[in-house]
Length: 370
Image (cartoon, rainbow, N blue to C red):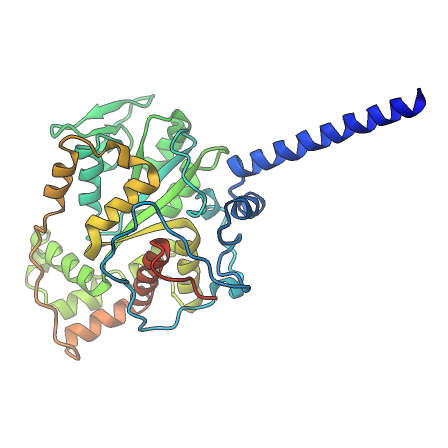
């Protein structure tokens, strides 16, 4: 009858609509690294909203493997800014990196871990652990000088496997793009001091995106290490005082400058600092040099590498985490060297404290401010 046909037609349309809704949700969860996908994923998982720091209340976030901390890393020396209220818009390049609050899909190869290697901040230790202990295929400066027309997995004398691409220069990253590094699925992790260029060049083709993680060190301690290393490498710096080095050679606010992609001669201001903070808040899993062991546990848990911690892997990691750098005495507070270091790291000091705060938030050890 006509009524029966109408009822059947209504059921068919309802079924089609339901299928479309389910398909839309699945697509949003898998590929929705932007606003819609994160909004839906957040609500289905019960986590924070698209840009976090919701006005209706704070949210506790915990990365797997974050339990057992001795205490919070952040000591509350400066007020946490309301970044959500500022409505900071990130560059299209940085949107090629997935929001860290969306669980990492370890079972597929569409998202590639990208380690931002901040100079003299423990990056080489992380590199050796992931390469020598866990056996991951890395993209580092080990691939410099290669000109092959296709990607190849090579092996170093220490047994580390790496691709024939240099990820520490723009030219090398461009070569990685040309050789379809991300779509190839051949790499397990990329190490680079150029996170913006890497995001722009390696992950500009959906559905292939990057996942940022990094280790942070106190800027003054890091600057001292940079100075000591430079003295060993460059005879011209051997006789230079720390104050002169800080004033004339040390890169001004290097971490903030790198994240906002500004040149060495360009001015930095408060808005640059807030933009750098927002990048970390949304895009980066944070580790700390003074909590290296726990940071590695977090990285393993987040990226699914904990399943590789078998046999002698834990012993290998413990040996590499043993301190091997003698820390030089810090300059006296108020001295010329101290003031020069503070002046060159004014914004980086605040970014570092924000990284400490994020470390606590990501570990579920504190609540995110409104």
